[in-house]
Length: 312
Image (cartoon, rainbow, N blue to C red; front, side, top):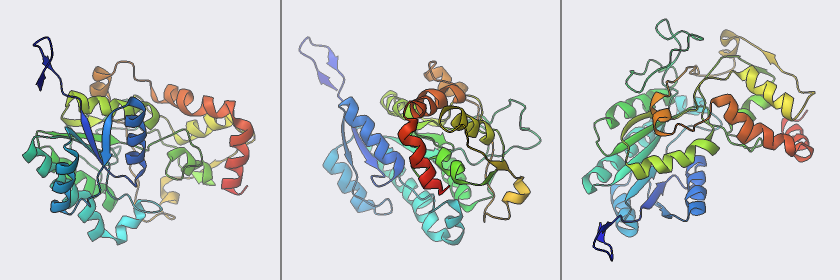
């Protein structure tokens, strides 16, 4: 805090340090901050290296750290089932080390976690409209990825400088981007059809920057309100981009035969994020505004590119 010319205290401009430069969300955060004219730099340290982390912080002198680093696996979370030590090192040890250092130095940290640590059950039935709250304990550890994320979220709650954002099935407008949830299911011949909470990054990531500036802490379900099913997403693609698009469904039991680890399906309660950002769009409205309406306006280029990607 510095004194202004009129004697009033002037708020120091935030400085952001982003971990996860080579990652999807880390890259998008940099684009957002650049557009906003904010001061930021990417970290060069590996999360497991305490000395390098401290050197990055000393170099940048951030007021806020955005941690979008970690391992999700390539091409998907099944990778983590056979690389457990690497997953622990990045998703648990590295994350806790960064949280510990930032707390020691009085720096706010935002951690981009996952909401894939819950699944529908008798207490939270699919279609009931009852969502998992920030205070609910994870009930899904079917994949090793989710197992490590649930562990680190539980431990991070003890850090009073950390905001944990539960991201789910992240979506961007680029229908060719391989990690985009929509891109994934467009490529499949068969999909399950289950309503889920999802995160439209185009809308929500700017909120995360504002949350950091507000120094919010604790856990935040970082999804658009409501749910959307696989079939509903594909129908939106068909309506806006490719009227000849077809797909078929299979059951969770059939899906289990072609994947290594089970997948999470859930509805997250969004009362907290709605209280901070009342303007947030419901998931279907957000999908149309940020993804499918723009794609429809560019279908002459989007459609051939998607067909080439799909190979059919």
